[in-house]
Length: 450
Ligand code: SF4
Image 1 (tube, rainbow, N blue to C red):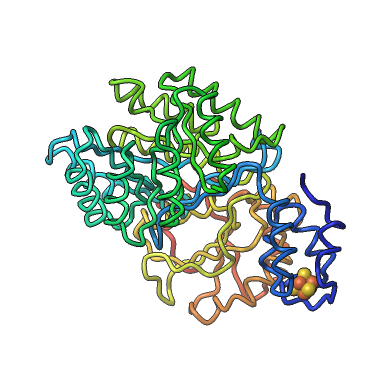
Image 2: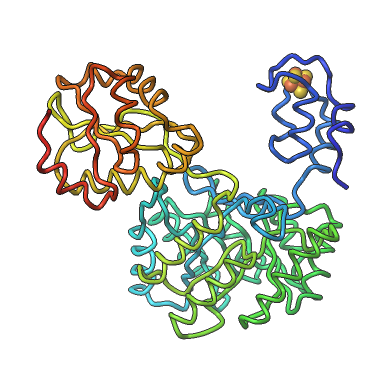
């Protein structure tokens, strides 16, 4: 049962010392209750209170970490059924499976694509997160050997070890050292041995049922035995089955606080079809409906890129626009005679405008004004991109020290503020730039300081 801010406040020291970077204990308690800060941010709270509050304020889908360092991957932490209710917290992990049944060339090619395929979009570097190493035939040496190869060749991958043999799991996990793999393989027959191993080496444990009911039983046993870090698979290997099980699991965990299903899910589109396009389609559906991890048979750009874009769309916070920092951005090595442009700090605007400027090959200074993530016209209409604020920013930005001329190019949509801006910035000539970013290259190529 979630605690209220007042209940949490009663367990805090109430000294209002501010060491948590929040001025009062009451404000801190309210933020903890709203899930906006962790109780650990208060260094003075007792261990007992920490445990009570931590448990009570934990998200209904537990946050599970696997991998380490740069290869750490986080799943779960979800608190709602629908993105617009709050936000989805941790993007679905995209994994590729390599198996001891694959020949060496296939394994090498899959690992190479995992390492190579990455894309930058609105300032975010997007790539696959995990490699699943599957023990295809119970050969422990081959499984450990393949695990070592993946660890060595893909330092950026979080690793999932997939076998139902506790002995094979132990040997492969030992080869992982501190890479903290997800041990995927607790089933009705081996859950005690797998559970003990996971506890012993401090790794999260994957649980696989034959059906959702079977999963609930195994997961329930593990929860009762004190296991907290689980990732669950209902065993469904059809789109409809996996979709239904994901929805039932999420609803049970969030609406009913049903602990055995309160964990991120791992799903296997790679085992649902042999058609790569159908596999991508299944992965995209499961990503939209609660999959913590989707496992693909291979990574190809035409499959991975759209999935990454879908991931980006679903897991951005709908209540907070993506922004870049207010600053002067030098593009293409500008000098003292280079043009100076200004726009808002909505990420998409920044990346489109900067992309067109870079594409023009005209070195330029791009001033980014903080408009709280609003686009040009919306920011202007909301009073966050008016002539007075632009003038204040230009004066304090230091751009005057970087260029000899005094000409500022404003977005075409702000043409109406030209006169007002000239009054606010009497030393500057205000030039109206194009309305559309796509017209910037032609505009810049012809630009000469006024
Ligand atoms: S650090 Fe702890 S005691 Fe200090 S203000 Fe924050 S919540 Fe209160």
